[in-house]
Length: 201
Image (cartoon, rainbow, N blue to C red; front, side):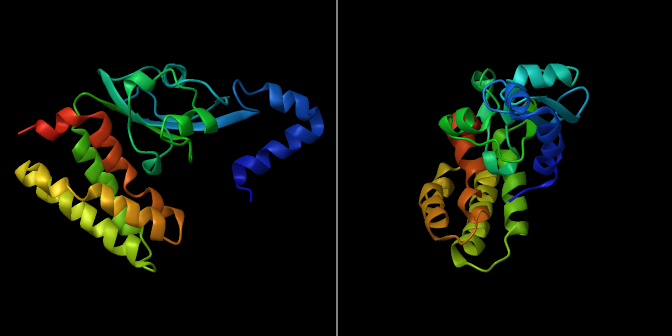
């Protein structure tokens, strides 16, 4: 399967050779169109060698706004990573090892003004809205997770998040498409990497 980005690589490979394309990447072949948004000075799309780190991407985008705290390396499906991963190559294999994914390479940077569980709620709403509803694990699971997070944010009682991992297992194992399989990652990664936000009142 191809998209516009992969098809756009074909003329360069045909005209200049596969080795040049291979060498354009840092950790994996080719360049990559990274879309960076959030708390950066100049959000936009930047073509850089595949495998640059977050700091290099954000430098191309004019720098951070405020004190960076977290980032999603590949859109909503990739969950959140703390800034301790800022040197991780933004490529397919390194991010998979980090428990995330490059996905669409839609990098979102969040600074310390953001409650990561609130941010997870924005993404849970997205997945709930985007679920086609065909399979029950995704249709019901997205709704239940969003409601559980709503109740937690209202009460800050961790009892409301007790079954999040069980729901994730059901959705990952039983969903027909990838949306249901990854819909839990924003919430799970926020809970894993930013437990201090669970204790906010």
